[in-house]
Length: 254
Image 1 (cartoon, rainbow, N blue to C red):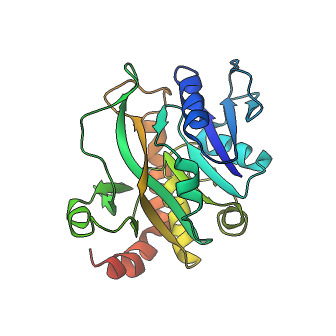
Image 2: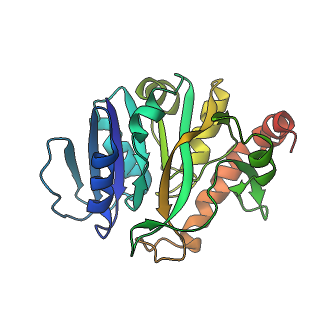
């Protein structure tokens, strides 16, 4: 079974995302909507469970809470404003090694029309240090062109809005998303990928399936801005900078 965790701060698109997950699934799933400091009512479905956090804990705390009550062999996380390709759950889980984190091909969603936008998709992202301030994923066009015929392939970074891994990998390697230092939001994908690399695992992109994430031109569903994010960016950079520069960059030759 795949346990899909949705950390939710605002219900605007939550039901549509849940409906997508249920409709497009082709295997056994449970959807766990973690309501981060608010309450809403979702349609009744035996595959859907709701976790209500009495106060706002932020994305990291919400994901941790969802994972703690999940029952699946696989854990998948997605944002509350996404749509998915047919059979995404089987395609991701059946092509996931025990030491992998897998992310699907990423498209861009217009949430007002609930349609994929006419913008090129993202497969590969390069991990860079942006402006000496933070780790960031940068679209990697050259790798996309060179490795277009490889359906499941290693990549350096992901947006973090949709991924899947074995529950056993979460338990033994990730443990939980750390809130101390990182803060309640951001850098979660980098924390998981660095921990995975340290443990001998890989971050993979699966081009056999896809998801579409709300395009950034549409309003955010939270009010967390740059000022609040900066300490977490700095903490992540201080924690992983040497490892990135001495081991990761040389391996990838960037």
